[in-house]
Amino acid sequence: MDVELRVNGRVERLRLDPRVTLLDALRDRLGLTGTKKGCDRGQCGACTVHVDDRRVLSCLTLAGSAAGSRVTTIEGLARGDKLHPVQQAFIEHDGFQCGFCTSGQIMSAVAVLREGQARSAGQIREQMSGNICRCGAYANIVDAVRTAWAAEVTD
Ligand code: FES
Ligand code: FES
Picture 1 (cartoon, rainbow, N blue to C red):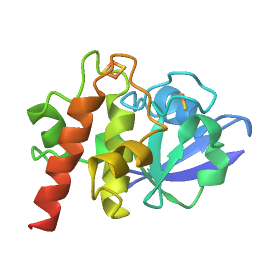
Picture 2: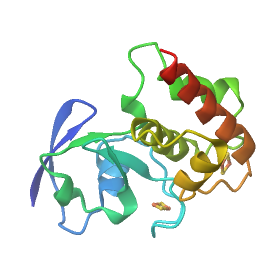
Picture 3: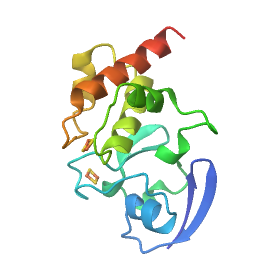
């Protein structure tokens, strides 16, 4: 099938098998490898991207179903040389070790802030519970999200 995707502000026209997931289309066809394949079955959150500003698991989303929607990946967050405030906060708080889960964590965190769901450490933990970190960097991840939240509410 022919699919037109709008990814990070660019229109991409692809010819795909209808069974191809959004994750595989992003990584294998568009070279956007910042989105990670962890489990490929909806259990780890490493593949989190935004479709029309809502976070989705791209391994459970067919590429064809995203046709006509706005898809944002980790590559689309920064503005030129200026990192997104959540990316900056992850760096400042060491919110990662190996980094494999990090793009998914950041995409989730951006959505959590947008949803107004980062009022406390407990709420952040609950809202990001679908993003697993095998390195156990959770404490620093929560600190990073709290810092980004504080910057947003005082902005
Ligand atoms: Fe999609 Fe794990 S790769 S949830
Ligand atoms: Fe290694 Fe999260 S930083 S899995």
